[in-house]
Image (tube, rainbow, N blue to C red; front, side):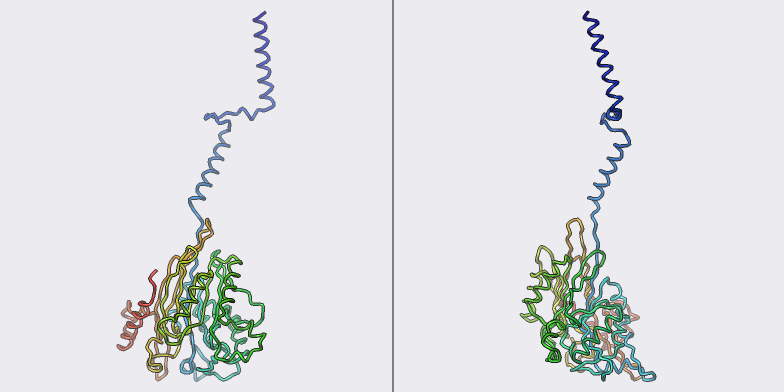
Length: 404
């Protein structure tokens, strides 16, 4: 009886097993490791884990380079030098031939255009500038992407000069900041390699020429330095999720080689408000640069980038430092894992404006000084007095730069 009972129990177990495997066949596919998963599924899971690990090990990082120069001015001797007497046209492209490679090497190149182009009006230099349209042709050809017109000469020819300058800049495919034609003045944001760069521009004043605008036009056509407005604009840029805020500012005292206490105070305030790069112009000589740590990252200020191109020089101004300029090239890097963008490198390229004669006609050229000091064939194209001046210029400029 007991034996029959055991046989009966065994039959029930066997029937139950076959019934279970018939209804749930996949649940009993056991691989050699006893995981309960078939080999193909296990390999797929291992591949997913490997890819996830690889993603953590290889974070996404992109970079962008921002290049800036100081004041680009065109005095009447420069206009005369560029004039072709045969066909009455102007050509300024040779001014930039030695620095063109640097300007074009950057993802974003910015300059201060310190004159206006008001077609139909007589050309003039200081104190009320009006330059040939070909000045902008040469600047575009050199490789600049953005021009700030927030400077004290932007209204030298009144509203018509301001508007015509903006229109010409834009017609050449460049962008303008600091002066505007309408109240719709959105913050300029450039997306370079998925790095969003917000660019702002301001000026201390307009040589009294703002009377040519109505009260309403003054509110939007020009960008006067106002701490409350600057802070508001920087905060607005941050809310637009920009990664880097650049402020190009026309300030300080002309021909002073040290920044004023007001410049230093405002420069550091702008960094506290969220600016990452502050680019100064107006003094027409080089002033120092510095790094300010704020918000857990390094931020850069250069108080004046000097004259990139002008007729101001020792023989006229009794100030040799008005011949000096600098190209500042800043590399920024964005780490997408932590959504953090930082300054990774700052390169300084000191420049000097050469003025000399060919066939009794003046020529102007912006020289990247180090190229000439390191290349004997270039250096030997200069007069002995010019060799001395570029060495002094280079030393003066680099002594003021913060080494990063």
